[in-house]
Image (cartoon, rainbow, N blue to C red; front, side, top):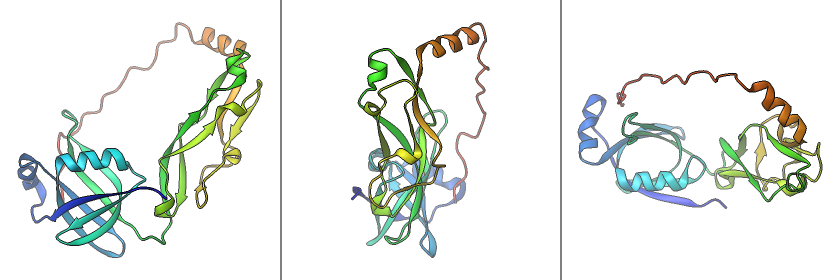
Amino acid sequence: MAETYTLDAQARTVTGKKVKQLRVQGLVPAIIYGGGKQPVPVQIPAKPLQMTLLKAGGTHLINITVDGTEHTVITRDVQRNILRGEITHVDFMAVDASTRLTAEVRVHFVNESPAVITRQGILVMGGGSLTIEALPADLVEQIDVDLALLKAVGDSVHVRDLQLPPGLRVLNDEDEMIVRVAPATTAAEEETLTEGVSAEPEVIAKGKVEEEDF
């Protein structure tokens, strides 16, 4: 069962541009929505909020107590100041223990491929994340993929090959490639072809330093 975290919050009456006053006081405006109930605006002390979000991510449950009432939620969106990186607003979604949720989780590789260790080939990675569906208590933060299964050039792991925990389902196409072993010569040829080709310049989007809150 996934670990559950706790936070204390207060009901929030300040909205719009006035929420800047809260941030000066070390409080972060947030909203709890979903679960068939009216949205609940709240304010949470910045430091414990930051520590909890760091541990819980977007896949662990958080029990938020608001003036004595407990709300079981999952983090859905975290807004930050684009200059300082400080949290400026958080969206929490209220969840029910019997309702299946979807979440994006990262692919985590464990062990080493014998084919790579013996320099027969190199690893070619697919996407670095997967979309999963599970009950709140069964959500995980990552899917482990054992590279020790890749013993020869051409060996691969697809979505259909994943060993998943009970109650969890991956929504990606079962034929989607997670990782494979390609011949080392192929990698060398690809590198030669891409030599001298400059990368696209990075585009830095301009945006508001702080968005209005509700």
